[in-house]
Length: 484
Image (cartoon, rainbow, N blue to C red; front, top):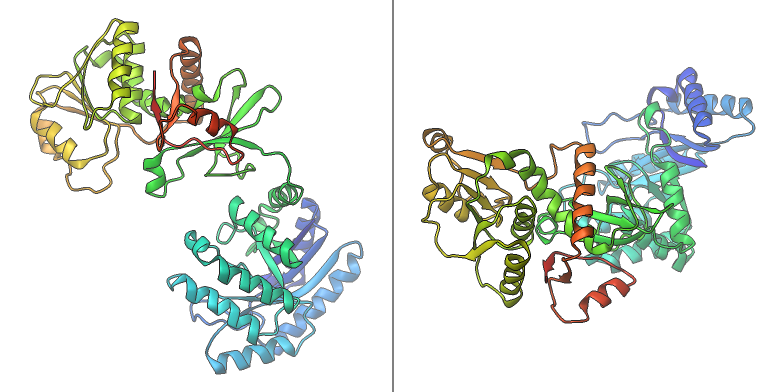
């Protein structure tokens, strides 16, 4: 295993620090390392390290000592050089990196975080053309990288023609996500491009950071392994605003599935953060529905004893419908709904729910009635304003939708004067993974026993859409509607 991007800092001249770095690498099972640090820096905020003859000579002297002491390890000496369009800086830095026998020179474009992405990519091209480098450092793939695939492919081709490798960087600052990694590996395969893997460690604790995980992902991608993630369940609202609110559902593992954080079309598990297990007996319908019910239940469950059976739900999308279902399961029957453009599948669903739960669910277009509880499920500031203006004193106001535009903000004086209880709960934050796990399993059991709920893709309500989704190789389920 290699870590080909380790900054030594004081360890450049202090051999005791360098030896501690070697010990850490051994502990982690890393047997090939590239020790380096920055040469001259463009930004005056950053301190250059390998930029003076006496320091560089001391660096090589110490490197040779640890090489002799560790013959079973492959220890390389390198430098990371800043690219610049400034001719004086460029001339000085090129002289610096060509005057010494560095095993590898990593060329990196720094300081262009706020520039247009095309300018950043062009800078990498110009660096490849003008700097004598061996590795192109931490090529950033911003969110908009897919718009510039032609330019990125050109960078890969130029680098390959010049026998320049790519730094697959595992630091949080520069790590490619699973889709980006797959995209770049496919380009490397197309052109025969070589690469190194490095943590970009700036301290001993960061050595080997995410290296093992990166090896696993690379191996799965190159071997075209069976997908880890069978489905992803996605909320259109959270997707629109760039949230991480996606849930990946793995293929069966030892009679269980894992729910993990995952984005569109992920083939492999990128992180196990906040993951939990569910039995494979539950179908994709159960899981997809409960993903939204979980948001509702986390909010409603603790306050069910405060809600009387006289409720107004505003909005009949995912949150509104799952709130309705959760209330029905908890014996509430008198529920009124306000929603725009009522569709046939909604009225049919309400009719069936009234029959199955012996409930009194009805539609209205008016806020001007006395309700015990108002459930806002649209994420619209105007809706919240209407609720605040019409709600009876002592009412419960539950905000499941997140108002992103902030055109109306609740006045705390109104809450106090009228003794309103305002509760928010759309996001999963603030709830422990154990709490979420237990509640999610409760919801799965409810759905499994009822066997009522089916879903269709929001972009189509054709009869065969479910089969198309389930048979799709790149399978994902977007915002679900309910067709009971």
